[in-house]
Image 1 (cartoon, protein in one colour):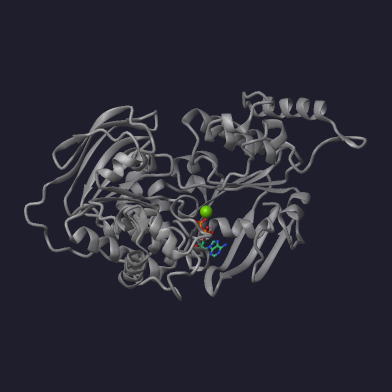
Image 2 (cartoon, rainbow, N blue to C red):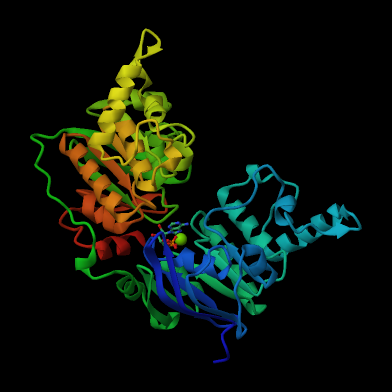
Length: 497
Ligand SMILES: Nc1ncnc2c1ncn2[C@@H]1O[C@H](COP(=O)(O)OP(=O)(O)O)[C@@H](O)[C@H]1O
Ligand SMILES: [Mg+2]
């Protein structure tokens, strides 16, 4: 084989003393598609952000075309022909397609932007990639899938040697995925080398030449895709059972539990199709699935954020129509959203004020806020949830991620909901806080309340759930009982469809 276009050797990276990449080595052959797989937090994105100068490595060596490189920023990597399509979309909704594609590298005619040329070039680019959208369309009017394709077009608007795609298909429909694969094949034939990060094994086996598996920041194996199977890859992804940080704890049985919620034939746009399941009092039920499988949409519809197009919701025997968030809250439902920074907390406010936002009804007395009561509730929360903070007046932005998440959960539990919806409750927080949050959730269910939890961290589902509903492409494909939830492998297999 010829010299790899990219060689990453013994890459080491820690965040705040937490070792995220441990001596990882990764080679990319010219014109190949090399997939990187691994569980959540395995270090995939971090490895590629180090390549593209977004993060600085602690040690190790990177060579492009045999020459040592050290990009001190993304712009430097771009200039060298290396581009990354980030998991977090970076298109600007208020701008048009063409404005986004040429943002920060406008084509010029003398002192002015050459708008006509940019429009023409953008059109050519979109045609070449088979993306049918008007160049003057506002991004805000496009589906997430299209935004993703525009993001790719933007990456390809300048010469690219190495293209990194970080979970590019997470929000694409089947046809958009086909489109993307056509693009990938075209790029390959043009000699572009591609790193492809994904959780979808069948896609990987279809598009990749090689597969590298990372686990907890360590390189596990690199192998030709043709020698691998889905089961084989999953096996490499899983750690030894005894290293799983959390185990399932049998909870005391609730006596004669009733059905807390019965969801019947739920449809949400074309994202959730005819999904039925129920959750008993005192039960924790997990929704497992890949991104885009409809997990989050189910939670959002039950909380009144998304319109339910069809289906019936029965709560403790009573049919309810969840029209909006107010009805949901009134019915005793609470949602801890995935993106707590955006939706769960006001970071500029203090811990106390954040609790106040949710507890308004409990603490207002003749339309005045009972400051004594809010203080008491805040102090209770700090104690009950073991929130590490100097005082209740500390700004939320000064708390660690784990403690912020405890505040969000505290905020909702203080309202005494009977059904708690959790979306990725421990994403991005440290292992200690994870364990504490799992414990808080188990205790809450132990008091006869019910929980529906969505998590990409399969180990977390294994630890918490009494039952797991498996979703593939918006449909329920399986329901796993506690006896069937033996290990992560069972679930990893099930969610692949
Ligand atoms: N900017 C950051 N600050 C602190 N920790 C981070 C940062 N980025 C990633 N991490 C941590 O590094 C680990 C690996 O993350 P990541 O590379 O995003 O994993 P993957 O992409 O495989 O899911 C995780 O534990 C994550 O929390
Ligand atoms: Mg990632």
